[in-house]
Image 1 (tube, rainbow, N blue to C red):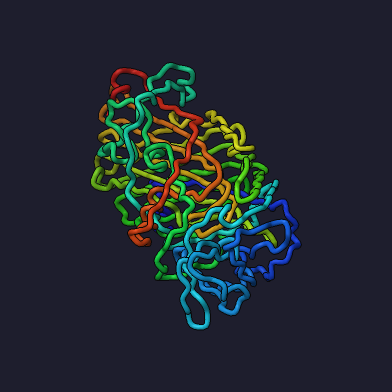
Image 2 (spheres, rainbow, N blue to C red):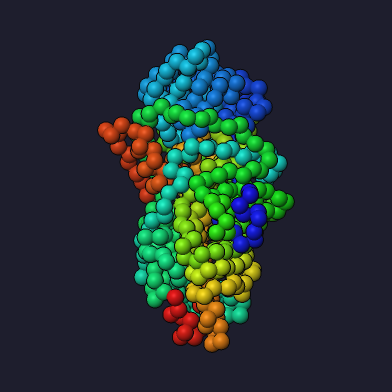
Length: 524
């Protein structure tokens, strides 16, 4: 990454997590595939034995990934071998199931040279399976993970929006080791130049948590879940879905660059601002793991999904390292919401499902004065299981390992800071990248830091920090409101989406101002 490698004063938001496993059905069933590089990109073919019963309108295209010639860069249109068994049965309204990624409701079939180009709309698990039972329990082998870029992921870049934090978001906490246990009022970090439209930020006198996470969840603690009726997508145009990669790489997303990475004991994603030299931003938000274990159980009977399990164990802590610098102060500030167009996947030969992980983030800088810098770092232990077990949510707790309050530093004429929210979603299922269907668990973390003016240093230097974490999980076709809006542009106006709300459960909410004196408690 040319832009953010040249300076330590960069901002990047990062998070990654991974899940792998094997379904509790035999892995020696025939899929008619040879695997290899195409399977890492497109997944494996459907199961063809008595352990799974498909819905009547599902068309199984034989050949698995070897029948896939290419996919569009948004993952909606798939070019397949027109001579593959089953291809002649495809038509609008049917469900094509060629692989775990090349699956969806057919909205158009057209010739593409000697092949067929098939445009697909999202489907749910129960639209595909009438009867099935999938179970897994596996410890992650990170060497088996691959990175899949989706260059034209719908809704990848947008401007964050949200609401003011709720009035009751005022839990006194002790984020700092120096102030742990003290009754310090929870004051939202004030990010200069930001309004409530930016992820829920309030002014310096507004008590409560800064709220980028609310913008990640549509401003109402809910992701939108694409409902189940077939939709008609226009054929995709443009580039192609690139092959999956075994090594990490850098991808450009608007003015930003992202780099997923894995090292022993850590899974992360770095994102930096890359548009110019005036603003340098960097955040490395990582999950520190040990024997990461994924458990899942999903039973579909007569087209209905029963009580399900998707649980993640082995996440020991989350950590963040933040730096930001601006040459021109407020003129360089940026705010953005990005759905990172990179998945981390694990394909299993002979199985119909795939494990997939995706990330979203919001970042907003509020730097004032020329040559302003802000730096901070923190770590929080994660105690417990993440996900849903037998339909019941699991809510891990967080505890301070390294206080972010103790590390806030930098130089600024006026109060300066940054805020970001990041969501990591782990899923087991199938479907096109824009609307992956299946079981999932997610973690949403919202962090804000503010460093006080250097002009106040003779009296005191005020610092603020907040952390708000939520978890969610369930089953469905999960689709953010931003991605939903992008997909709507591809639809005829007569097609309507039905959207369901997904609940997120708070697991940690903390904010603190130091020192706890009147000058600081209301600063901003």
